[in-house]
Length: 474
Image (tube, rainbow, N blue to C red; front, side, top):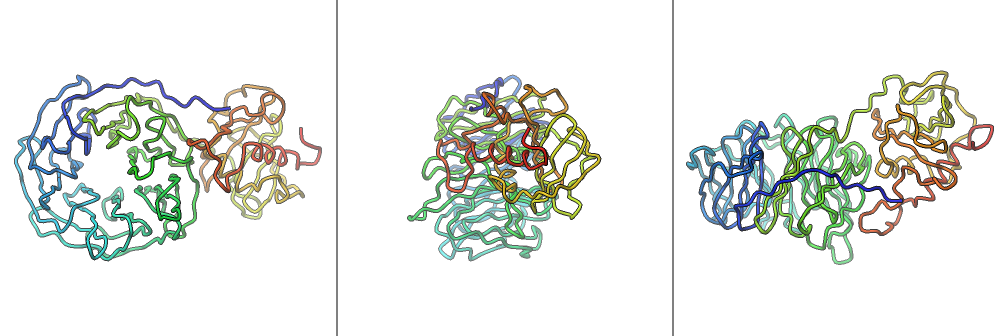
């Protein structure tokens, strides 16, 4: 049973460019959009509400990367003549320029006026820092990869620069260039672009499998601890074509991010990896050239290789709401983290923990009381609880469990990750409503990936857990 994930939202088409859109950045108040296109040497400022072009400025020829500073009045750009330039958005006047050693593959700017770029050179990948008015300086060099692709991201406070390469994720002090930490990926995986989350050493980024020819295939989003390498979740396969660049855009709230996929622009929870919805697009995924989310998280801009720019309005709907559960202990009596809460019947819940501890608790969707340990352990279940939690985090349909359940046969399910309740919903365990609230086809390319649990395995695992309490299964 497949959920209809398409979001019915209004969209606007902004016409003016005639060549591939390289970037579309928002002014701080989200009222205007600044776009730049490859080959036409123009930057346009759009009034999104109208919609219309309110101003146009001409830049040097050979534009390849461009980013708007967070202040919204200055933009930085790199060009094929191997020069970086900074322009005033209002007047179009060039303010500063500096030489480039190579063609940048990634470009970011900070709130304090610094410009960072990364590129591929004969000596390996490198990262540079430039404060306009000074000489660019190398921050990192001699990262060796097969693929000349990379990504850059700044921490919220601008003090750390995260550098994503094929097998390396390096964290630098943005001011001094000192290497703070390094995550080395597996040899059979390729690291794609990503973002750092403001809470803890967590990264949300793309990882792909490498086939025998070292081509990146089956890309997924992962959230992982960059110090230990431990993953919290993985998304469904993003469904890119061979050789297609991965496009991502993080919401300002960091609760969700946008990724280009075969159905359109997919909005994915950064807490659980679950698909929150899909914005259908008029163009092929192959034609999407850039993505961006407005600072107020209300708009998603999609640029195309044909020069069109589409703006989707999400409105005030909260895609990923906070699930506050202050009265549910997050660990067992022995200290093991809580993975799942399963409703046995109204008022009675089964608590499942990472080490296999099982407890019963009286309560509701937001409260546990009279917690009692069970002699039974979850180790003999049809599927291990950690795998159940991993799969359910991205495949359980969201449902507010403070509301009445939609069926008498439905069992409430909550999935935890650390201290967070990442998703809650309900599943029919028996009869014709067996798949109630459950996505049984998690991968967008329609293929079952080795190691993933089938829908039957997950449902049988939940049924087995619910049956572990003395007294039987229902």
